[in-house]
Image (cartoon, rainbow, N blue to C red; front, side, top):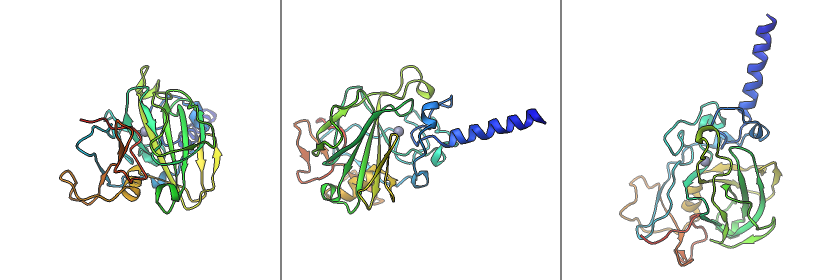
Length: 265
Ligand SMILES: [Zn+2]
């Protein structure tokens, strides 16, 4: 009996440890001590939005490899169902060569940066006020797996499309992605009616903060455009505003842009 009870306790402990992973810690199933300290994001909001990006044809934007709410990773493998959100992706993944410049998706302020353990890597959080995006809510954006810790200091103001750091694969080696890791940007967006927040570990906590599909940002704050030929008939197509190779935003009056510049085709 004693052995059985001990076994049960071990199972309970494992369950607690697993449930404590952040949304991005859905990969790998070894012992992930670093991540166990990070409480889970509000996973109940992680559902596919149905939004579909429509990238302008004249440019080549790095596209989404694993969308928000996806049950699979970029390589088609399943995210484990024991993870918070039932294994649903809490952001978007964009596959990128290490060292690719990452852009502020809207004007904002650096609110946090740091270096986490496995699954998290080097990250940076920006805040964007309603005035900066044109949305009714505050938006917090988190860029993950950066190559190095960005030089921008906490409190620094960033402008729309400004280079804020470089992509990498920190936090992705070991576990599912193996020795070589997976160079990509994981972008999480959080929205809140209030701009007040607290920093807890690598997380930004806002009282009514909820994670949402970053595509909704472009859907709501992007410049409305005519239906184009590539638009899905669902009405859920989102034309992606971007920064071109010459550094100019398109459309000229947009307040939000794709987090990576789009070179011409
Ligand atoms: Zn991701």
